[in-house]
Structures are given as structure tokens and as C-alpha cells.
Length: 330
Ligand SMILES: [Zn+2]
Ligand SMILES: [Zn+2]
Image (cartoon, rainbow, N blue to C red; front, side):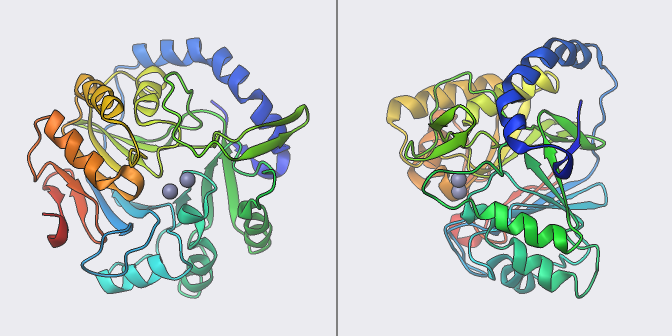
């Protein structure tokens, strides 16, 4: 497993090689995963939504962010859309972000990265090491055609400020029981992206399928908990990736954005069948999941209103207490 600093490698090489590397390493990793019986399990976990559309406390916006508190560590998952939203929502919710050193970015889009610079600027006044490490998937810095990849300018500014970007080409255990998926193979044709974007490569332009899209997955006594930003790699592709590359285990909770907002009834039915196979029984469908899609899937999975909810600012998932929905989403 490789963990590579951006400064040492040209990202286009990452992008071009990511699939080959993943294939080469897959048999090794799968073997390791299958034989690894002593997997690390976390004992405490709380995930609190800091940015999504629905809010009865704080500010709602088109975007996503969540604070992950796991075994005494804090990880900021994505940073919302508008520069001030996550900072302000955390204040409104009485959440201290100044001791968060690790940021996980699911992908480059502005609705997940828009708060990053403001958060670093404000939080470093309280702690120089706030948001000092940023974990990203290979491809996040790729030059997009006819649209600005704001990650490139942000990278320059943040690195000059002492922040380190860590780029993943494959899955990696960040802390015991806390896994970064790295970029995800697109086994099923979920096509959860606009189709309008292009990426510049050495061999010409290719469709931008947001190759860097990655998720965070936490290994608990009850199974895996998945946290997804916008689900561009596909909900089911992400679950398959976890099973093939980390280890086989029930994925009992799925939290975040899953990009089902414009999915057809057939696609939702297919998705629900797969979710059942994976053992998903708790869902916070925030951001781009789609409100109707969440309710449709809840019905198809026979889940009740305390186990599958629309995400809202300030709601939470706790390993012991389960989902605490916002009052607007109860
Ligand atoms: Zn996106
Ligand atoms: Zn998004």
C-alpha cells in the first residue's frame, strides 16, 4: 500500500497509472484482506453533519461536510460549499473544530471544498496544526477542460501555509479501523456525474468521471460505517470496492451524499436490492442523495423513520445511540 506526497509525483502519472496499479495490487490486497482475521475495530464513533441542504439549526446549503469523531480522533470530512458555512454551523452547534488536524476530501467539487481556506485561516489562529493534513484521492488535481479546478490554486496557497496534501492511489488504513477507500473502480454503470466535464491528459482529453472520488469507511463491531461525499463513483461501486479491497464484512450504515437525486425507479430498486445484500440497515441520506430517493429506498428496504432519514445540519450517527435526526427530518 502506498502513501505518496503530492510534491514527489506528477498527478497525471498517478491518474494514468491508477487503474494498472490497482489491478496489480488487487490480488495481493484481497489475499491479505481475506487472511487478515485480526482487523482493527473502533470502539467509539460519532458523525455529525455540518453542511447539507436541510437545516433547522445553522445554515442549509447545496454542499456536504461532516465531523467524524472516532476513538478520540477527529476528522473533518469535506468542507461544505460557501466559505463560511461549516465554520458558522460548527459555532451554532457548539462544536470545536480547532483540534481537528486531519481533513478528508471526497473529490474536487466546490460544494465539498469551498470552506477549506476559510476554515484553515480561522482555525489556525487557535491551533497552528488545525487542518494541517489533507487526505485526497489521485486525480483531484487533474486539469479540467474549460472549467477551473480550484483545488490547484488552493493547493498552492495551503502548501505555502505549511499544510500537507497526502494523495491516495488505493485503500489505506488511516488510523486503526479507519479506512480511506482511495479511488474506486467503476464496476457497475452507475454514472453518477454530469457527463459534461473533460480532463486533460497526455494522450488527449477524456470524460471527467471524477476519478478521485473516494469515501471513508469505519470498521466497527456492528460492521462497516460508510461516509460518502457526493457518491460520484457510485453507491454500489463503493460498497463493492470496500468488500474487495478492505475486507468482507457487512456494511451496516451509510451516511452522506449518494447522488441518487435523479435516479429512475428501476435504478433505485436495483440499488436497494444491492444495499440489502450488503446488510445496510441505517442510512442518513444527505446532500445529493435526493429526498424522494431516500424515501423510496427506505420503503424498498423496509426500514423505519428512525433508521433511514434525510440528512440535516446538526444531525448525527452514534455507534451506541444510532441516528439522531434533525427535528425537521424526524
Ligand atoms: Zn461533486
Ligand atoms: Zn456534491
